[in-house]
Image 1: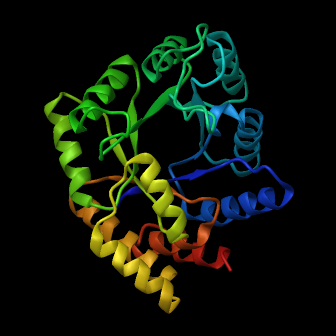
Image 2: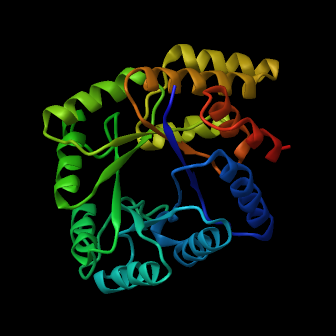
Image 3: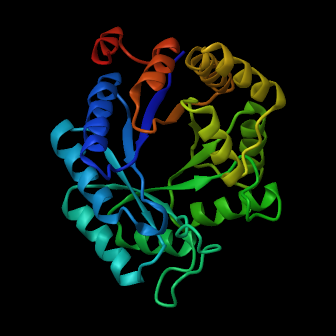
Length: 287
């Protein structure tokens, strides 16, 4: 079983969070990821923190770092200036997203002088010729999408605008990913679609997140985690569920797995090793 892997981190807001991020990066870098990415907070709230984390990780680890960049609460000129600073820092990969609006804002409202959509952002970044661009994708219907086909149509527009690959929202039903992949192929999308994997660190947190982003949770899975929480076996179940999901994806021809780490390496590390996708020596780097 062979595949490449990548990881998502988020920028730290406190000193303790900084130590947690660097410990996570230090542990997972030994699993030889193809790249790592750093997120952008809702409403652009972590813009400066994201830039600092991207530069620091790249400089001190040698990892290939992709910076998230969104359309939220910035003009076109401001957004492209941020991109230019990334280019000057040697960052050649950007994950271009519409972005989440500030909490309590009631939904995405583009600025008159800003990019109106992720498609416009991708087009502008592609015109610079400086970046390899990834975009988001949704195997399950996005909360704002009319239907599942709308997810495919919107992804097609982003790929046509200049993106070279897509990274999906997390999901728990492997068949939903394969159905989405088949619809993408039928629509003429030939760019790689990287499945996003979320090992469950907090069952209550995942349930809230899934509701927000429209990810269905199968009934049998919910029952299993409810039971595991009572029995104190949540981590064991989380590793087993994520490993099984990844195994089915790999058996179905997937060549790359993207893990949402939530800045904690333990479950992700265990899944990667269970799949045989990292050297045994990497086990020594996580307590």
